Image 1 (tube, one colour):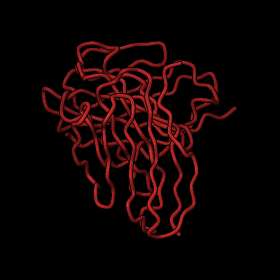
Image 2 (tube, rainbow over the protein chains, first blue to last red):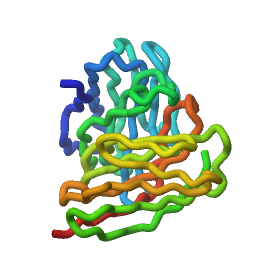
Image 3 (cartoon, rainbow over the protein chains, first blue to last red):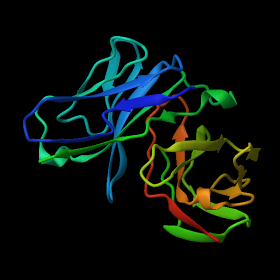
Image 4 (cartoon, each protein chain N blue to C red):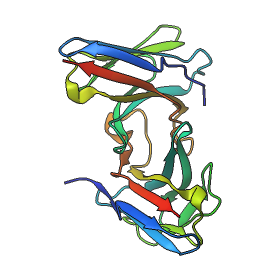
Length: 118
Length: 111
């Protein structure tokens, strides 16, 4: 089944304790990204990757790191989590964009990771 | 990317068509209209997209006005499982892939 998986789905941690949220897709997609969703602020992009070893900042990258060593994986790293990073996180992936081709325009999202930093 | 305006909430009776409007009066010629939905804290789900012609797929229809300043997403026979927040997104293709979700329309389908 084509999907984007995230782990863990739920995590409660304490300030300053490094954590990694994994994201994996089995669709051979070039593009992957991370979003966070907060009440009243909607979904905001954190980082994205156009392909292996190519990453760039989104709208809210502060406090996060990513890596793209393999095409299928795009982990999100919080080196020193703080309470303001408490949020719902989504990973997404897609093929290289081509709007004239219907099947190449869909971004697939993972189920989400709910993170609480105390 | 052009800004979009959607009503914050709408109701629809089960089995009826749900028509969700979106205004994007500042859309430019190379911007597409995309629709996604999010069912209660699940990952957003792609529905449909278009440039200027009306589009239909197995999930919905997208009607774009001739001047492209507004569009309507139509769910022809809404079910309870269509209750979700629907996002209209206008963006240039190949512009970095980021989706600006905005606040969307919360659609409640009632029995």
